[in-house]
Image (cartoon, rainbow, N blue to C red; front, side):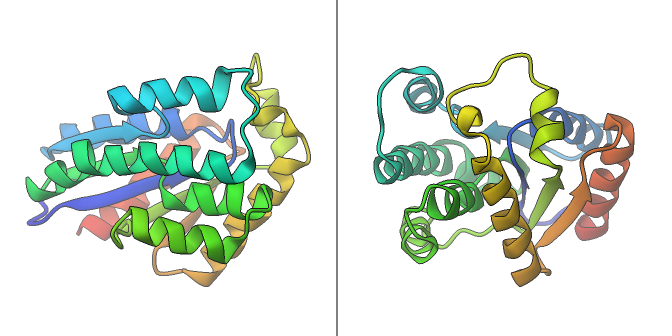
Length: 203
């Protein structure tokens, strides 16, 4: 058992399998006797659900920088309402997306600026950094082929190629925190690597 909270995040482009792998990981850790809290962004809180509608489904035209701020509001609520309380109770947090998403999607993909978004995220998260980040890496054409319908962020085509490159660069710069997992394989094969990476860090 862990003696303090442990914060693991899933990152990657749309359709890489974050939700599926987070569900599998949560179940596997609970079966091993860990207390686990599973959250996701945007939408893990009541405020987040409302913001998710604006960010993903509405026809509102939101500028890239405004989009960063909406995601930031969702993230801070998630931290205050879900993540910090669970960490204080020495639980394992399994989160789908965190600050890295804003840096990759809006900072680099959306052109808001990597350093600008990084400094904003540092402020928003009060310096909270995941203990482990699992990057589910897959080519955009393969990931989008898995989805029946595309939301407005996913419809940006070549945008996701930029985002994928941004993620891989971040992982190369922070090898102690990131583990890159080939997400183009079967759900079971991907999960074997996910669970192995998490159990290695927990031990």
